[in-house]
Image 1 (cartoon, rainbow, N blue to C red):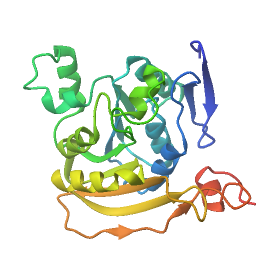
Image 2: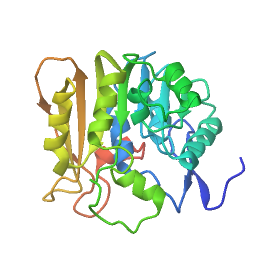
Image 3: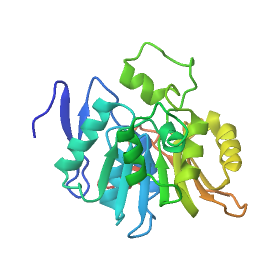
Length: 264
């Protein structure tokens, strides 16, 4: 497959899956890998949407780890969406994984917003109907606008900061797309946990499971994995935490297993 400037093909080391990445853009990290593992209990022949799919890493990993019948990735950046489409073709996943290049806020606003063109309205009608998905998965931007580093390139900025859509937009759209008792899987930062739980409850997605991710023992957690179910009864489970590195700086056995690496 022909690559564009600064692009490379990375082997995901699972079921011969590969992904196209751009070293000048935003390459996937351990958060996406951990989220795909957190969601590996997805039922066979179900439908999933990935909000803010980026280069398609979550969808590709889920295709490798589950028997999903269909996954739709929503991505606002045209260049990044194109990379995802080419990765899908590279892995022969065209029948299972579709990319829709729109702003996720258009999904709910399609009927009331005259600025949304007919092409995007048709995409939403054909692939993103209300109450039509069993699962929503998302690795949204972690940082509120005007916080953190702002000297990043545009692709990195949109991936990391709530510029085109904020936390409320992601969770509100998840509620719109999920069937009754459908499941939301999300990875985020611990400092946003109160905001996340408040928004989930507001959108009638009940928090059901939380897993904290620590870089190593005696360090503060730097990621959280959250599962919520639409219109479910309250009952929250705090899972056993994940530790990424041992004291010697090597991956823990749990992380090695998630990456399909040999445990020492």
